[in-house]
Image (cartoon, rainbow, N blue to C red):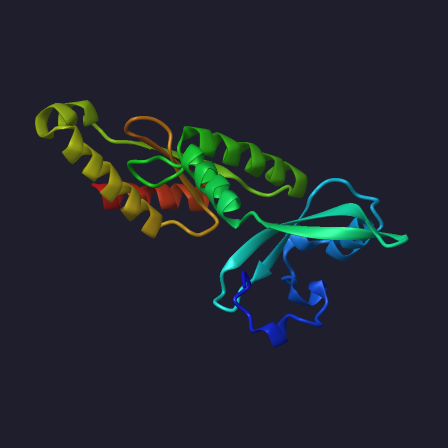
Length: 201
């Protein structure tokens, strides 16, 4: 019922046939289920399945030993953790996203900086940083009010996003300060910074 599949598409099929392929959380899933069946694994095994409608479900599997006549068997139970995982993802995004602009916030940008610096060092790649701020932003707040100033920040961030690549990271570092992290060499980064400055002006 949860998978929204017809009975004939579920009954008689192995569980692994229903699990999503190329899904990181399903790595070694067959081995983990085998350990559950043997009562060799006590913790919950998480896996992802796709419904007929294309919705991704996060399911938790647990095994418990039960007496069946004279034999000891394993009862597998399945819990739908989808809502919980979606809530966790939403909270995670909120903790790293600036509410006014939709860009990364300072915390999110610090995490990206750490990850990308480590990647650049490991693979000897290029990494450049552009810092931007809005001239006289405090005066703008006093002149047009905070609500209007927030709209200016949102429009600016939208314009910046449209002019950077998918491999670049844009974040709001402070009140009127933005940061762009790009895996580009200094010459290309300088050209990008000039284009952005011209666009904003």
